[in-house]
Length: 280
Image (tube, rainbow, N blue to C red; front, side, top):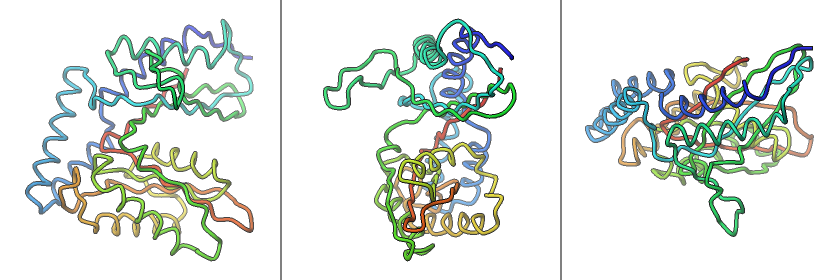
């Protein structure tokens, strides 16, 4: 049995909150540079240049890439042979968020009740998804999620007869409706299958994948390419001002589902799609 202290987790989570919000992921930065190289709309090119310059300044000054430093979302892989000592695991993660958002001068955006709207003042509680795995692994991924893009996301319970055409139409319709609101160029996470809530989680997990990596299943890799072409043909462009670079990538994750259902979720993420993975 491997023991991990809550103090280690608190310190790690605090550091991850700051790092993920201040340093743009390499895959996203490279995709932005590729978009700039291929862009023919002069205004779109200027916007992409400004986005890249902003990321450079944020990295240099350890400042947030975006003022919306998001709701802290975590994905844990916790080995069955791991014993957390010194307190509760989720309490430690929330304490790490509390420290990180204070130490990094990150905006606190969480309200304690969805209708009464009083800010908790420390960006807690976090959203935590846990997968129990074999062995003594402790892997934690943070994906801070701003709500300019989260608000543009959607779930639809399609009928099996809607098929792949229904999925394509729904994804493209969701992006078209979002237009410039989620601060494009965006990354589009698509979850297909399971139940309503499983599809939604899949769509968020899809955003964790490097945008340069296709789905390992050739069928879904081809569907990702098709969706990316259709989305970039919408002429929404960077920040919604037109151009060829509406999306940097489309990532699909799937799960078995019921014979009577075809759940589909679209989780849209902005041009600072943030995720960071660490192990203890």
